[in-house]
Image 1 (spheres, rainbow, N blue to C red):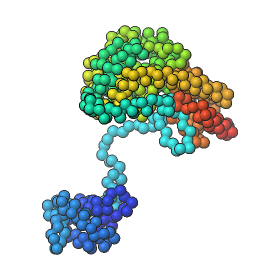
Image 2 (cartoon, rainbow, N blue to C red; image 1 turned 135 degrees about the horizontal axis):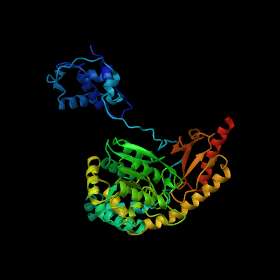
Image 3 (cartoon, rainbow, N blue to C red; image 1 turned 90 degrees about the vertical axis):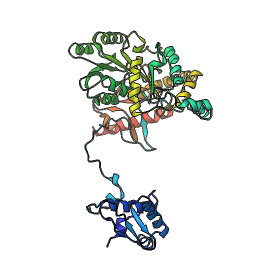
Length: 485
């Protein structure tokens, strides 16, 4: 005699309707060989009484099973498992197996990804968060963007054009970027040279998988953007680290490596290096361009926060120079608008963009056409320029106020160089204060580096009161460590 209350467990709090739970449990019992072909099941009245549910619930479950050919219902006689079900060897009854197949781990061979990147920190509402350099969404023209988005969804031509060419990016946005990147960065390009992506990381990933393979070598800075390193390592390529000092990545060391080893690419963040925020000097920029020509390697130029430079006009990107098409230029609007708005772009020779578009199609058929066309409108109407002008003024004020607070409260515990731009300060702690211990008292740091004993302090997203609270929390953590010394 079957113990139906154990074979068919009912979870009243489950989002799955009870009749579906009954049907699923009976299917699993058949699959597990507990109910063999031809086995008679209880009548709807009997099973309802056993499970303490309404009879109509059991009838609904039986009807579904009958429709799917798991059981046969002979009116006024019996309900039985279909004779056409293969005879299966009974397995030991296991409640977890019957109720949740995904409660198990995946035991077949599969590749794994290292997740210990310390990029994001899960927090509670009470936590003080030090991000690694996010824009202040409260200043962002999100309302204008969404207003345009909504208007496009109501217009015939907006609906008609929303899904056109989104694998490479809508033509409207790419055309606007041709003018925008020419005016702001000195890039002489056409729409065919642009691929719109879901943020800078997708551009890095696509570039890596077209340029690199297990026989390749790529040079990166040390320290470097860890997720970029992961993208390069996933190709099987050899990662060669070159020190980053106050003048940026050391191009003399790059030259020495190139003389001994075939280098396929150099990944560089020349404007505000991540995580250290240093800017690549003019002399090293020129040398890197010459080395690229001399040794025939590609330069992947990640210019994620070009628009934020405070002391002068920003350096023009490497991509604006004469480079014979060797530079893949990467940018993002996430640092301007909102980290959750994933719109980035890649600029490269047209034949490379064609292949990146084809590869992107394998994993992601296209982007949000409405959002891309809304951003194009924002650029065309000058709203983006107006926002950047306002944001730069605000972020400069916040950078200087943070500098004042750090000098006033933490000068004897830390060292840093005030960056000329960007949205974060790279802060090094004195050796007696390990950076890993700086996450107590409701303080969360999104980007810290144990090897450097340093962390990024993103100031752009915090107003003056929030900066004061955050520095106070840092001081409390440091003092607690000091008391244990």
